[in-house]
Length: 517
Image (tube, rainbow, N blue to C red):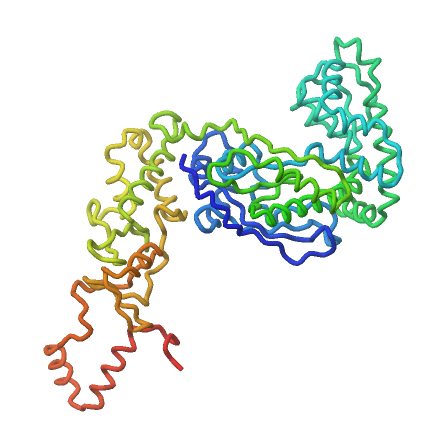
């Protein structure tokens, strides 16, 4: 899978903010477009997620960038920033998000963010929280104790703690995280797991639960506006499940997380780095060429910025961007059972090698020896659909193409008709300001001719300029047209009418309003 450009052009910017937290920010998210195509062809990704990915792929710009606005999801501006309209890597499952971004960005995360921010609030206001302090300082030890006491795995233990932090609870009579995640938050009545004799003597979670609920009451009393907004949200959604104070705590902690993220973002940008995506309590940072890890001193500078802005001592960690998706396998012939991506990449390679473009439902190729003139590519018969003809021509020697040729061809036609790609540009219309000649290009608004040998010709070619018409003659600046003159003067005997006719003929070369006063 070819990685995209990793130069941090710093496309991110932050909009007008209110207070320290900030109500919105705009980022240009980055993903690997080739990985996106592989995900769209992957049989293990559900339909709903693929629809979201298709929309993201369609709306991206500059090859692999997607402009995303992050906003608070309530009018008061409390809590986290969420991607507006949901077309964002933030809303994509982490397994897929990692597959899309791992070659482009670093994933920086606030370690154990929620409990650490709650502990910060407790210390700030003088509330004693010994059990929460133990969890924040010795999280791995607590997780191991839970596994030993209740016969559950580490993932399930983490789910239990997450439920407790949101003021819920679970009877631990299930042995896997999937079952635990499906249960509603409720009172912790019993922690005895089948076959476990030690669970009855392990009381830490009961003590932690009681402490967290007292802390939630204190937070709601200390931050009444957040509590009011939480109550309004519950009433508006008619929510009856979960603890009534959980939303208030979430809004207060979300504010702190948001301030911490924006502090990180500002510090990274001061250091010349580009932030591309906000992912709840973490963010993505563009990699530099050849970089595998963010420098430790950069993470420390961000930690200092967070403490300066929030008062909380938060540790940052760079997470490995692991994925279970085998995208590279989709790029090998006959290896995935789905050849669409293999065929797509073959088309893209062919198009890039031959400087092809897509325009008006056809494939166009450069006119040999010209800067920016194109002509319809001659593939197959005139009666055949031009895109299908092109696909059949390029993939004629690709065995996997013929396994499910009808389905594969339809998918490829849809791709060529609807999706932009830097290696096979889709041009809406040619540039009406350019006229191509055998020896160069004439720029109409500037009344200027650029020779094929001119250095500027390379720039026009690389910038994707497509001439609206090609005249297979050399441009000389002035050409006699005796036959044309004879025909027109015969029809228009009046000299003034002839002059006006020539004026209007020249005027036809320009758009309305282009040269008008």
